[in-house]
Image 1 (cartoon, each protein chain N blue to C red):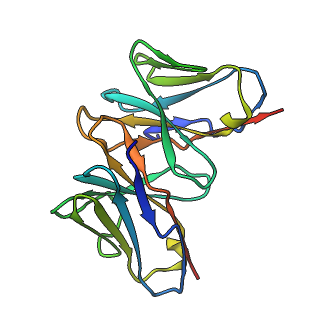
Image 2 (tube, each protein chain N blue to C red; image 1 turned 60 degrees about the horizontal axis):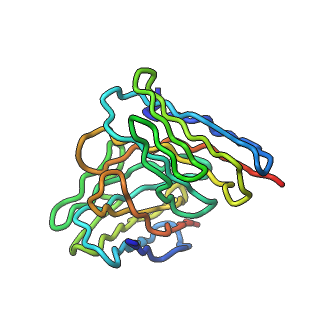
Length: 115
Length: 111
């Protein structure tokens, strides 16, 4: 089946630094990828929709200058958390659609801890 | 009111028993519905789609009630491996995959 790989799975950084998370679709082309964040025992919250070759569409309340999304190819989208703060610590998950309605394949998630 | 609401649980279920839980959604124009499963600290995975006529996949049965705007999931003959959080997912549009996730219902199956 379709596989989405996310890297790194875990990252610890100092406050004020930037962290880049990669999301790759391994065996299919994904024109659209989604980025979510999930706090402990909470639901996934959609942050933005990443479209290949164009600017990402951000959800209300998500700072586009803080969460930079780049979707330069059909198999790779990146999320960069800029000037990270402790409140940015969360589980970030990407997903890609195979084209089948409702069927999203999720990356393994990246657990970010900002000290 | 949240777009998609679920009882967070946990539902403590004896092994072999049946458990059922619902999910309500607020957008009456929602087009499609799904149940995803998420294990602790893992990514969500599609469990099954929910069709208007109801559908069954092995021990799992999903139903949709458009009039009352809820979907349900029933698990029969629960296994220890069924322990997970079950996410109710709604697609409010006819096209695209911009899905809305519920907070999840946690199920714990115990021997």
